[in-house]
Length: 335
Image 1 (tube, rainbow, N blue to C red):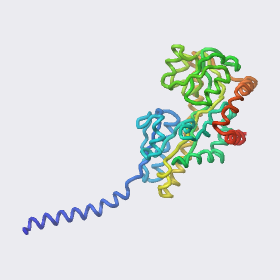
Image 2: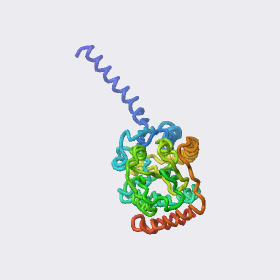
Image 3: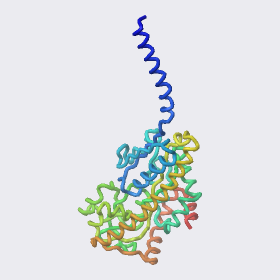
Image 4: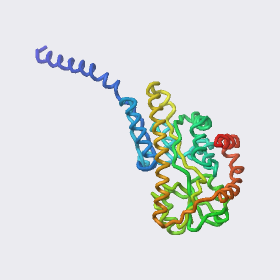
């Protein structure tokens, strides 16, 4: 064996030893990756909340966790993301509360019921209380852990004619997202509910395919629906919200100290996201007023009472779907 061969072998051995010494600690320090997928733009309340969670999670864990955010359905669309989470392809989502119906958890459709929350304070009694925790726990048998509720906001009605009393809805073609509760809501008002993709609504309003819709002020304004809707009623009749959820097996497998820091980050991100939602909706409502294309009617207490009475049958119709116990539990907690 030549000296050159021995030298080469020695260098290889030394290199392997160096890799062993430096590589193992480096591997041990690889951050835990959380892929957070959502279907809206980064500048929305949900998008901003996701960014805030990323910032705080990485800060509080000293880089032991890395949060990768994928907005605008970059990874998965609405109908695909829940399955992706259950399979572990992504670790975190924030779907609309109504999206859990296909999983067999229709209880969350209680949040779609008209006037079930008088105001934000009533909503918080549910989402930040025992009832909210009980509802999130319903997801665990599906392999999902619920962490928080994030707001989109309370809805207004828009249309091409004034909507003051329930009879004013008679015959109006109103766009809705896919929801049995919302179908029943507009049917109770004598309107014609039409399920339509959110991206198609502006053109449908412009061409008269639909007469109006319901949505949060921020959604109405950012989608420029106010340009093709002559009237709006500031009714706050319904709520749109999200549940921030994670893959349960992934979450349970995290080190306890990491979970504690992520819980802290989520609590603070939730406060931030809900504050953004409130501010954005207030600003959007004012921007719609300032645009001058839409006359906004502020609902009076008497008008509200008439709408509540007209929509009361929706509760009875949805008892078999949502569960009477769930409806009664949420109504009691929201008082």
